[in-house]
Length: 394
Ligand code: NIG
Ligand code: FE
Image (cartoon, rainbow, N blue to C red; front, top):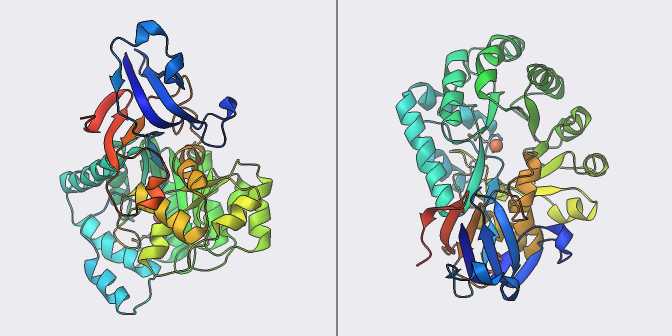
């Protein structure tokens, strides 16, 4: 059993407490049971006497649920620093860069891919990410997609088959879609929980995306979609129609897209990835419009070597607040409970009683500092299932 007291601000995301969206308890205590779940979250004065003896006083620091980064691409070889430099000199971002990473990924051994993915997952952990989703999508052949997913499965249970990232060189689109829906899916399904398609300019059209997602669902995978990142298109509405868990990017939306997402009543989450817009010098998605329409919004890093080479959820929160008109409360919720909703998980992204004891101790008294102090290391210690997995309480 672990008992923390002296918590300046405890974010629980427990709406039943009727303490706002974040379920904030000030001057709080948090108890982790022997089952590694949250056993109690309360004001410290209400902590039962028998639990006080071995309590650790954290001196007024804030505790928040671990970040749930519901969209990353950690399995890849090489990097694209030169492409980034060219972009910063005025060259536009296109989906075509994915093929550069495809070559490097095909040329990398399983060990090299796993080492790189673990390095990035560890980097994410140190900034407070306790659960992450990650995808294939840089192999683009049956062999390379299937080994990419095996690497992904070695770092997380939230794995996504993204064979339909772009069409590889020397393939015709119809042949490639048939391959993705057929042999590639058959080889990859066992290591994947989700299927995803990049439905955008330079990647896949709506009809292909529909065929691929439907084939994945038939094989027992949950659906998600990359949609409306580079231009307006039918991806978001297709996603809602098919009942995907999450439409990701959502940068170019019209009123019908926003209404479709809102009418899904939270069943399809809009996952916004502001570091992708930051690193491609693109317009940020309109988070305010989505939230005001009643859409459930998640925030994620999109960590990948092309459009967003960062694992930092605190940076994502800063951008969401400073550049996308989200409130601090909304951004922290979207990076924790919102990410959990995008993965259809109820056991994470919250510190309500019975949830996994996944949380971070910040070196500040409030969660507000996550936006207020951009780029500063604010996470002192990270706990997963009640155990300290990064940093320390000292
Ligand atoms: O989510 N949009 C598609 N895929 C990635 C970028 C991939 C790349 O450029 O390597 C994204 O931004
Ligand atoms: Fe992505």
